[in-house]
Image (cartoon, rainbow, N blue to C red; front, top):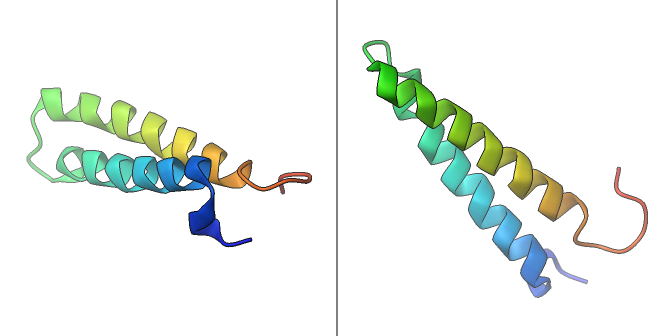
Length: 62
C-alpha cells in the first residue's frame, strides 16, 4: 500500500508540514515572546503528525 492511500497518513503529513512552518518564526534571532509560543504549537502538530503517519499502516509501529 502506498503512503498516500491512507487518509490518516495524508492528515499526518499535512500536520507535519504545518508544524514545521509554525516553528520557523519562533526560531528567528529577533523573535518576539509571542512567537515563542508558536514553537510549542508547532512541536505539538509535528509530534501528532509523526504519530499519525507512523500508525497509519497495519502492524507494529517502529
